[in-house]
Image (cartoon, rainbow, N blue to C red; front, side, top):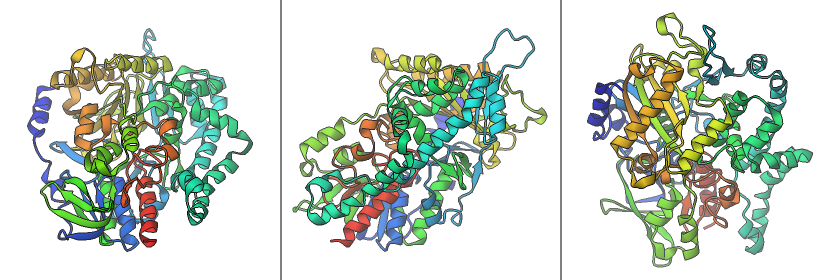
Length: 581
């Protein structure tokens, strides 16, 4: 990387953030001594929860420790003139009800839908002057079949059936996302009234079962088997299988050969935008613009949002009920309920007085699987990458493949498994899986004219390195250089185009964004940590053992991704509880 780029990163690393973001979310209104509800953390789920509570007439304040709102859905100008979606970088999973209920379009949300959406270039040596093959997938089914037929005519014929199969599963699971999990505890041990109420939580589960019908055994296999076993039953060509398998392992410390990896794939195909199922897009202005739109809706209804206000602990009465929060400056804010958008570990192990939580509950929280494989590298370049498999157009204008998720080192599932094996031995992957996105290809407001912002979502990188090594600047730059070398093989000249980079290893993601272990989902999206086992069994309905304290972030059902579902669901549970007290 150019020396001036590294110098920029070092110079900016101590900066609290550019003024254009810092000034935008100063405190909305004066801090009052008491609210009905307090939300810890202004991540997108926390903002969604605040908006819904305020709409329902619950006076709500949100406290964010950073200088910007959004949590991992944030835009930051790390390099002057280049605005990055620094952590999360794509939108698809946001629940349609949230989009409409909060009138996000009215509050400034603008989307750039991607079509095509996936590009996997090959490395093919010895082809002479012939351009290497690539796999480009989008919404045009006939064109998809044509692309797949380069590798297998049989797979081209099977692909529409596979898509219909997966879409049907996504349709069945969809209702489960917008409701609290089945309240098993109330169903078996509650009062008669609690049991009757818990019956309603069965409805989405029964609806899912009816939708799947006689195909339930096949779909059960998708959720429990290794994704390679599922894909092998459909396809024979490795480039197609590896491309599809990336969605089964992305963000997860799992191999395509790991049982249960199929659910992570489903989690990434069940979204949609503008009424188009499975569509992914970029947010105009970066992901922080989504958080701004949610916050704008919340404050328009009367919610108060405060940045640079760190919650030090949850305040509990002598009778064992939440009374509010204590801020880091010592001031106290009273409230009837507290919702935490922080991870379960931060919420229950750091912010909640331990004497008010059962020992067994604390142990279960401390044992949650939060392993993360992700290192995110944000890159500023002075031109577009020029891929051997799809040469650039004259003048450097973006071509269709530039708007895609570009999969590198993804020619076959063995490469993905080998990258995973490296990390399990405490080493960063020798040939890391790379998802490269160029949001400025559709949103030129993110970079100076002719320049681009590039997101490199890479794995696998362990949180703890072997041999006593730590993720210091030398190790971080060595890994980033390895990633850049990989990109260079597919797109010669890439390294020469770089003017700056921002490297976020798992410890960085934990430190900056509060992601435990660097895990983008607040915890593994494995079957033992999903639905009524998220975050732990018996406490999956957003409530916890301490009355008045609720979890509303990605550590609660239905998990990670920029969905907003946990925030909305938690707000509805809180409102019901407030009405009944």
